[in-house]
Length: 153
Length: 245
Image 1 (cartoon, rainbow over the protein chains, first blue to last red):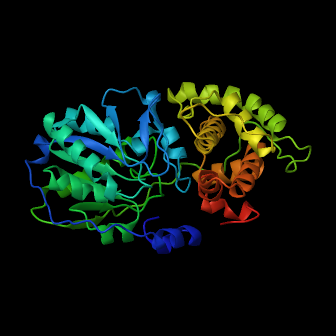
Image 2 (tube, one colour; image 1 turned 120 degrees about the vertical axis):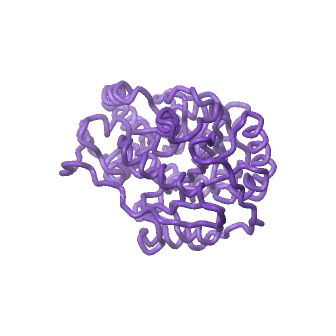
Image 3 (cartoon, rainbow over the protein chains, first blue to last red; image 1 turned 180 degrees about the vertical axis):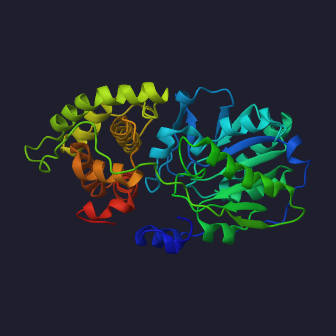
């Protein structure tokens, strides 16, 4: 399911009517070879640690996910009910592939995995997320992370 | 969401996005995007298949070697089907009572929760985790809060830091997660649509959430209206609602 034509009619109609933000693009950051990159995951699945404040409607902030968090401590509080959660229930890596990145790092395919990852809640307007995203970028740079893998749901 | 990539790039972080909605990816034109033909909610394609997930990940990260963008590429393969899949059945045979037959969702749902608990325990053990718990309630309490509201009772006072609409939303999500985790406890695999159809079509909890939804959309409070109209019943199950708005 990737194009509107392949989706159930109601969902396609809903998604095709969503007002997309106008974001100024243009930046394209180059970097070292993949085998030297240090990578963080930025999810929009509304992930947080057990006990964190759950996301609510309109939330534009983020939660920090230490890379060594126990899988049982990662919960999802995205407000939307219009995507599958049973895959996430079965295997955290389907939305938050930190274990896969660690395997790639162990094989030398990537340079390393960040000590911290981040999650926003993708149902909110992204424009007010900007200062929070910039804080995330600064936090990444402070720990030597040069690359982000973004995995929306 | 994908707009976040633009913000990060402008601050010096290289990004690659795995996108599930191709038309949105085209419109937002992030620096590097891998468009994948998977179900919403499954950006890496399929659970418990590390080899396939690695293929997706490698395809995405390979875009980082491109010298200029925006780059939008499509992952060529669909998610693998479940092996030897010949249908799925919940380990406990539940029968959905008539909606509000005796005016009490609470009793029916409490009974279901008790019968599903051993399977939820098993699922938790097998997966070494559960995704239930964002509400902060234990599952019996989450069921009770949802059902009391669905039954028309005066709502329980939520905690001082939380609105009723938030407490109910998180309790609903936990209840759904509890049911689908328990129902998928046995090996063999359950499809996401199977589980959704089962929850909404065959369980008292699904009935209770439909009743909760109908009550919430009629409230004056905007948060409750939002809960009822958008945040409980998936669009794929809209045919079960008396009114969809």
